[in-house]
Image 1 (cartoon, chains in turn orange, blue):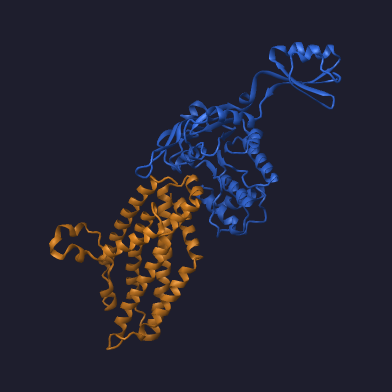
Image 2 (image 1 turned 45 degrees about the vertical axis):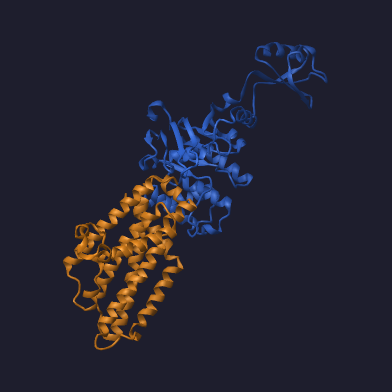
Length: 245
Length: 317
């Protein structure tokens, strides 16, 4: 099983690393990180908190662009170019193909977020003489959320094209962070436990204000990540298994 | 199931109905196809465009969901991944990630095919040489010509040393030398015990290498069987003779049809029951019999005749 999933994930990583969009997004994000001290709200003795908050937002946007650009196109392109024929005919299960693809995207996104976090840390060290290790907790939360989003995007891409995938993924992201808005607070308490909320990955406050994310909360994030990613992939596998290639 | 009856590939009752967008009529691309391929043979799958050949192959290899039917390779359900692990497949046009180098592509498919790590380099090198791509291991595939991609497609199909190989138009896009190489490769595979299912439009290629054929038309099997049996024109024997002079003796002419003469050699066909009599007549006329053989149709003629007789039976793909 893993002997087939790992080569697929490796191929996704290799294919991603030759894409210019990955480097353009990272360089652009690094420039923006360097510009954080120039923000108008920067000052009043909370510079480091503002830096951490904006840096986390930049990580999120960077990871989001990368995740969608990789996940939206991978499966549709392989089906359209028929490169998937050689893979499936070699005895690779369709579920292995989808999981391998998702894993490859997860690795690339993780690498990009890690690289960007290092850049942010270097800036923080130079500017504040503080390594701001909490940024890594924020990076983990962003990565896990992107993992869920990538699973959703891969699932949708199993039967549709890139435009639908991006639209559906952004809609899912919006809905995932709008539980209170959409359910209307106390008016729909019965639905709250079943709502696919992504708020669990929102750790801006503890990261920005320096208190850090408690270890148990990190474990709960991991559980939510695994649950949502597994559900999305299961649906994607069910859809892809029925598709004629 | 297939191992019990001795088939390397067994397709029973294959059917594919494409469900249309609402309002359009349903379309049956394949309608109850049965194919049995004996182990260690080259089996040709023929048919005009739209006959259902590619859909049948795709169902066999799990690329298209069958509406109905059983598909087994070496006794295992080939619509399931485990049933395809001993199979090599080359699609009609081999598609590869264009950014990969040739050796990287083969390494990827070797890994997916379960080739042990320590054997990948040796197999890659051997197959690149076998398909005439030696020295091109580090060339990226976007620099490959159509013919080179075709050759790499064959190497890809063979990288896991399969027992069953399915080739869809393997000689398409190849020059005559390349086509001959592919024919020789298929014969070598057969000689080494590999079963080959060959889908091709090139009738000369099929006639040269195939032991058995299945001819599809409009989603159904129009004819199948041993190629020699199919092409044999029942009841007629061809005789070649020389030393008969410029005019065919009356005793022979009365029996002969399809008469032709060239360079002093007469060629004609007679009814099987008249062979003995005609050979004696050649002797009596002072001539010599050069050869006696059953009259054999060309595959092209047989194919054309069959399609005319079975046309209008449906709409395959």
